[in-house]
Length: 152
Image (cartoon, rainbow, N blue to C red):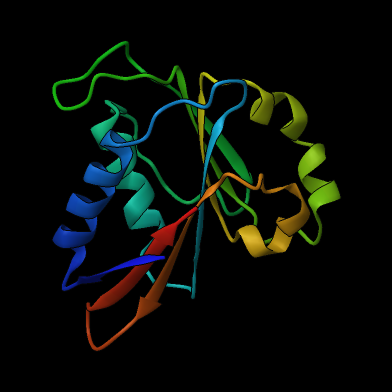
C-alpha cells in the first residue's frame, strides 16, 4: 500500500487528477475506485477533482440522498484523454448491504469497461466491491492535513 501526505484541499485535487489520469479501463469490467474515510476526510473533494480532470463540467456533489450520479464524459478534455465513457459516483453511506447496491443496476454498471466508478463508503457494500478495485483510504490529520493510503 502506498501513502501520500496531503497538506490541503489543493493538494488533494492534484493527487486526484494525477491518480485518475493513471487509470486504465479494465479489460472486461469497469474500473472501480473505493474511497474510505471519515466524514469530512476529503472523499468528495477527491471525486470532484477526478471528475474535473475527466472533463465533467456539471457540479459534482456527494450523492448521499440519491445514492448514485452518472456523468457522461467527453471523448477527451484539455487535461486527460478519456478512456472511459462514464463516471459513476456512488455514495454508499446510507446502504446497509451489497444487496442494496444491486437495486441500482450494479451488475450491469460494474460489467461495463467503459465505466469508471468512484464509490464512497465501500465498507457498507463490501461484498460488491471487485477484488481488483483501487482502494483509497483518507485519514484526517491536523487542520487540512490528510494521509492518503492507496493501492489494489
